[in-house]
Image 1 (cartoon, rainbow, N blue to C red):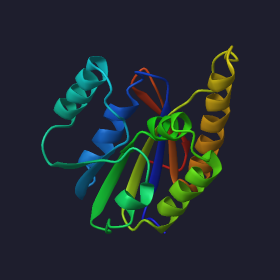
Image 2 (image 1 turned 90 degrees about the vertical axis):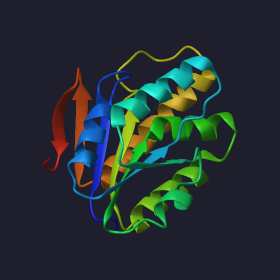
Image 3 (image 1 turned 180 degrees about the horizontal axis):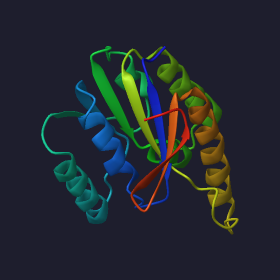
Image 4 (image 1 turned 45 degrees about the vertical axis):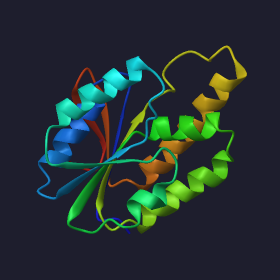
Length: 172
């Protein structure tokens, strides 16, 4: 079992990553940043650069867009790992046309076996309208199921809106 799992939800640009980074920075443990995003254009390159500057020094950054066990299996109890984010991880699998159920099971199993504290960031996609296209509807449904599964495993669940945290489960 992981030592402690904190699951942070929020909309795009809600402040969830900054909040998650602050939690990790104050944990007093070795900080690992699991980057799930893939850089395909200048806009994403700029966003990644802003996030690196925002985090500051003292982080070990590991880029892995798909396989959770590669990142989580070697971690130890003296570390805290920030997965940013589950939404990009899911998108990577969806666009690669992987079996989402199998990929999700691999992620959840890796979370269950992890020996480090985990902070997992994800987008809340269920607050908007029903998307007009099949791929977007498939994504929204898969993201909702993934968020439910991660929240069930988490000790603490926090919704971040406008940079303000609201604890939904557990305590900070």
